[in-house]
Length: 352
Image (tube, rainbow, N blue to C red; front, side, top):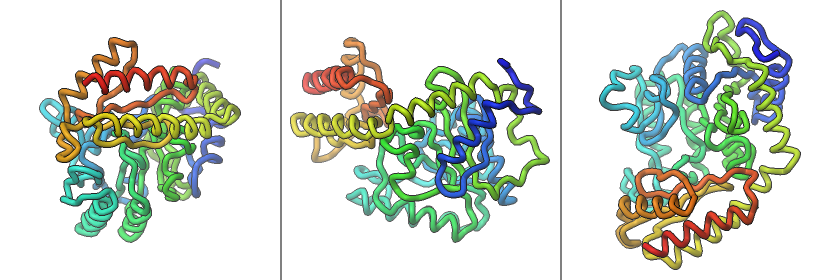
């Protein structure tokens, strides 16, 4: 069948839910589907409200969780929150994220910044005591890798205050970081995981919410109910994607190619006065452009200039935070194509 009515299920959707439940960490085994990540974030927020009886959320400034009203409300990017976007959802509180440089908490290292950030999260959660969920990317897609122990501290704070931990793995899940879920790097299981983007093979629109089994308490409410939420075509595409990722060892390949790419970009950092940092995991990594390495002032104009040089050579990517060349190759990229792409980046940076 090409379609299944939303009040019913279909065999591919059941199989996909069982597959995701078996792969997910901890006791995460209950699954709902949507057609996109933004909608999946909003389903996760509804579930957190239903499970806790609370409505407030905590999240990071500068984070992106989707373009819908709920997703933009918990997100922290001005482009999606300002002007015509407001007023947004009430109770969507934010804290500054950690940062290894130009830290909003005034620290001088990733570890100190992470400690200050975790302490602030704990403080805010306890300040009013009625937050339904803390939602964040386990590895920020800018990309920024958390310091060791950061997520364990946040997990403990959430547990102390009865707050659910939601991990937005839309950009990082399915092996992008060299683990099937990015949170595996930190040994922390959230209460809810949201997947999207690559779940449909990068072709068909499907996203999912994977929740703890004991959070299946909203059966009388339509917290999803999207027309194509259990579409058999997109569910089959997701099952095929997962099968290819596993059978072809793409998670391990991501870790291997990512280590190769990071080594090349670290070498570039030694050769360029304008590369202030190189960071990432697996096949999601970033090159931070700065005015000089002493001040680490963001070189936004330079990053844009480099981007257009690369675009002229046939390479496209995203600039995050105005000055971070964010490179996220496909899991199936040929090593020769990866090296060609890195050659283009290196040449553009060294020509600056």
